[in-house]
Image 1 (cartoon, rainbow, N blue to C red):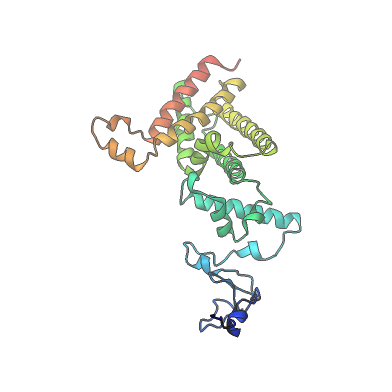
Image 2 (image 1 turned 60 degrees about the vertical axis):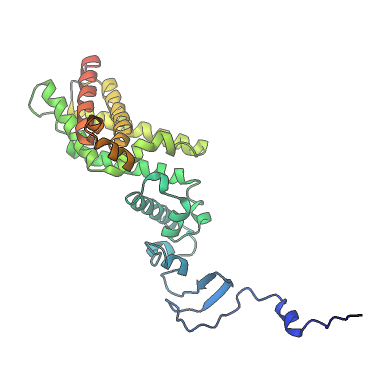
Length: 294
């Protein structure tokens, strides 16, 4: 009859639970003052005592989350000022990311990492990724309207009706070309940004859109006194629709760019400033003819 020897003591000891924050001996020194710990065999944390926070996984990504600046000057946003500060930081980071990637590639996880907050903390301020982008869209739209006041020609500018509306179309086009982020957000506002938001966010966004369109209509009517209020509103809405349609066509994929190298396909390649100015001129001419000021 065979008998089995009892398990070695070391096997029993190995089965004992290990403390969650058991210190790990290492010859490496931490990036910042603190101590290295291990939660699992694959995750390392640094306990930092300064205003700058980092994690080792972020150091292997580009750009690394080495400084989150004012976002981490307080652990929890308690005052309205601190909450607004974090909202601005999230929006600013999202705008920076859209300068590097299309809207489709912007994820809430990456946004949270770059801001230096947990995803759950970002969701305290914006319920979804689309809610972040809608807020950013409204902010950038208002900023563009602020600049448009100075870009549009004054009502006292000389010239006949055609010269005046063509000048306005050129000014609108130049202002939009100078702000590609606004064009990008306009082009995906209906197809992407409005798809994953709550009723409250959708209603707030639409009310802001009406206010922005009203302001733009007033600017157009100021530049074209012979245009009625109704005509100016339709011209403003037509401008947004034109950008939404032309911007994607003038920013094709790599495959489409290769196709356009064929001389037979070259006529399909559109230039955004040229195409937009031509369409806006037609829209303004039509609105002046159909909805003139009385």
